[in-house]
Amino acid sequence: MRYTRKQVLDRLHAQLEHGHPIVGAGAGTGISAKFAEAGGADLIIIYNSGRYRMAGHGSLSGLLAFGDANQIVYDMGEREVLPVVREIPVIAGVNGTDPLRQMPHFLRRLDDLGFSGINNFPTVGLIDGKFRRELEATNLGFGREVEMIRTAHEMGFFTIVYVFNPEESAMMARAGADVIIAHMGLTVGGSIGLDRDGGVAMRLEDAPASVQAIADAATAVNRDILVVSHGGPIATPEDAAYVQARTSAVGFIGASSMERLPVETAITDTVRAFKAITLTPRGR
Image (cartoon, helix red, strand yellow):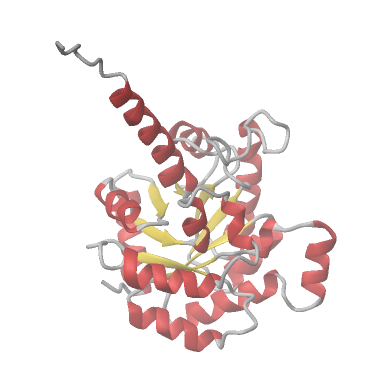
C-alpha cells in the first residue's frame, strides 16, 4: 500500500501521542520485513546494504562498487519486500549521487511500485578524509543527496534521511526532510559489526551529545521535524533507551540491530540446541 506523506506522518505522530517511540527496521529479505511488521515496526526501509548484510558481509559493502545500489533496492522492493508487507509504509534507500539516473524518473518508478518514502542510502556521509573532499569537488557529494531529497519532497514522498553532523542536518531540514536520522556510524556487535570496545566505534556515553547537536540544528530550521537515532554504539533496545532518555530523539532506526544481530544469535542458539540432543543408544 502506497501512503502519502501526510498519511505516514499522521501514523508516526499517532504513535508518539500514545507514548510509543518511532521504530524503523531495515529489511534485507522478505522474511525480515514480514516479521519486523509483526513485531510492530512503524516503517520498513530497504537498503542495498541489506542484501550484502544478510548474505553475511559487512554493511559497508553497500558503499562499494559491488552492484547498482538503486537497482538492487528496486528489485528487492518489487520481488521480496513489498509483496509480504501488509500495512506499514515501505521506504526506499536511494543512492542520490548516482550520475546514471534521471532521478525524477527513477523516483516516479519507486512511487508506481508502491514505496511510500525515500531515504538517502548509500550516503557519502559515511565517507570522510581526502576521498570525501574529492567527491564533493566533483559533484558526487552530500549536496546531491540533499537535492534528491528535495525532489522527493516536492513529489509528495515522505522523506527520512541520514545525517552525520549539524551542518548536514540543517541542509536536509531546509530541503524538506520529515525525519532526521542522527547516524552514529557502523553498528557495533556481532560477527561483522564494529567491536564496541575496539577503539573505532563511538562510545555510547558520547552518543547523546552528538544526537542532540544534530537535533538542535534540524529544529532550528523546522521546529516540527522529528529526530531519531541510528548506528554506532546504539545497537540494542537498551542502548536506544539510553539515548532517548538523554536527548529529544523520539525513536530509533535499525538495520543490523533489527535483522543481522537477532539472526546471528537465533540461528546459532537453535543449531546448538539441536546438537545438544542426546541420542538414546540402540541395541545391536
